Amino acid sequence: MKYKALSSELYQYNRKRFIREMKPGAIAIINSNDQMPRSGDQYFPFRQNAGMFYLSGIDQEESMLLLFPDCPREGHKEVLLIKRTNEHIAVWEGHKYTKEEASAVSGVEKVYFLDEAEVMLNEMILLSEGIYLNINENDRFLSPVEHRDLRYARSIQQRYPAHTIYRAQPILKKLQMVKSQWEIDVLQHCVDITGNTFRRVLDFVKPGVWEYEVEAEIIHEFVRSGTTGHAYQPIIGSGKNACVLHYIENNQQCKDGDMLLMDFGCEYANYNADLTRTIPVNGVFTDRQRAVYNAVHRVLVEARALLVPGNTIDELNKEVGKIMESELLGLGLISRDDIEKQSEDKPAYKKYFMHGTSHHLGLDVHDLMGRYEPFRAGMVFTCEPGIYILEENLGVRLENDILITDNGPVDLFKNIPIDAEEIEELMHAGVMG
Image (cartoon, rainbow, N blue to C red; front, side, top):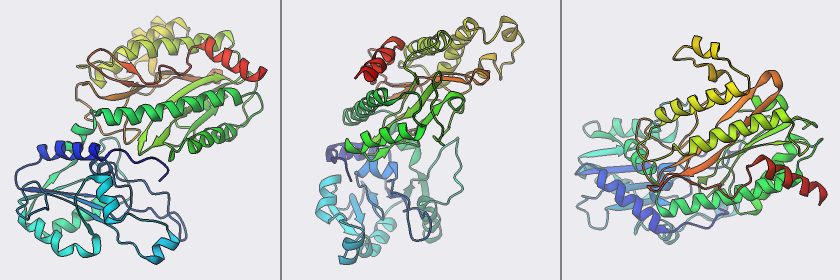
């Protein structure tokens, strides 16, 4: 790993919180992710299961965490199982955790190798009165790929049919939505690296560069800063490409007079930043571009103020819809007649702003969330309004990451350029330099 390991106190704290939510007599079994085959004899880069990392800090395949707070066997309330290494693995794949290293990272004292733990694991399950399993539960996504957790759940149900199965994800959602100070600090680090990267891009962009060259500048800065790389596939869309919400081809030339939308963020210690900025390729906004840009910026400022304890995603989106409606009226994109004729499920503003305003951010870019849970202090959200005018080949989105506190929202990107005038000044300085 490129990043510096986070404090084991974070994972010990997370496990204590998780255990408090468990039913008496139950055991929780949390697995690492699979290594995903790519083609031939290759794998995609390994990305740890968020729940496994959250509770252990172990960033390695073929790992397992057992939590059994009522275990009668001495020293086995927390157990970590890791892959046994050998000379062949060391030569071909590199270093793997020793038991001592895994214990130091996670704070779990009892560590076994997987190949020596089958009897012990069977005993612990038989001593338990129920089993918590961590299945990916996303209400907006059904994976066509059968992942490790699902295969393991089927094997557990087949081998221990008399045990009650409990869901770990509702507990993890409840916990992961509210960040500890350790997590806020690492998220701020991700934000700072991403912000520095944006400043680098401002110096680089000019008419004639290609979208993939901009992407190359971004990954260069990410890697040299010790990150894992991109938090997600970066969106680098110029001209009409900025109107495609998940445009990732990044293969067109940036032309004089176009706007360039860039949605990117780095991943550090499995935590993520998520930034969007839209800039004029030539460093100067036209009057129309500035009007649309400033409208989006005003929506962001007003939407950010709504990220306070007690609000909800649904209420946020309704209020931001009203704000956006007013801005689109001012830009001449919709009319009063359009508003009067709109239906409740398809408001007029959706023609130009068709996505939600915010999502949770953390170990996943779209982090675990309870969609209907009221906002609480410690939650971190994106705030990302946009206006997309395909007929004008003009798309503008702005996005910052916001920490909810009892004293009002804190913008983690507060020191990153966003005002249109500042963008122009910095791009002009880059050209002059």
